[in-house]
Structures are given as structure tokens and as C-alpha cells.
Length: 60
Image (cartoon, rainbow, N blue to C red; front, top):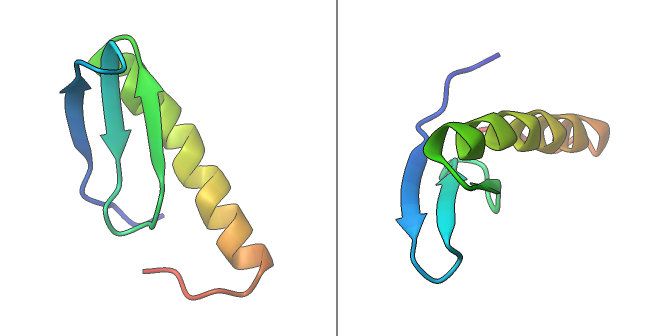
């Protein structure tokens, strides 16, 4: 699996942390802590990649 740049930032509005992968459109996750957001993002990344493969879409 390829490594992707990951952003993790605090969201005052959401009361926690958002993690996203800019290269994977709309691939993001929420967590109460940065570590939890990253853990959730790892799941979201796998789901995103599986869906792209199933639909035979190009993966960045």
C-alpha cells in the first residue's frame, strides 16, 4: 500500500480532531484525540481504496 500525506487538525466546531488524506477525495475521519482520528482515518483509507478498486477507478 502506498503512503499518503495525512493532515490532522483540531476542529473547534466539531469538538475534536479531523484527519484527512488530500490525495483521496473526501477521505477523512473524526476522533476525540489526534490518535483516534488517525486510527479512524486508516479504516477510511482502506474502505476508500477498496471501493475505488471495486469500481475500477484510478487510484492516486
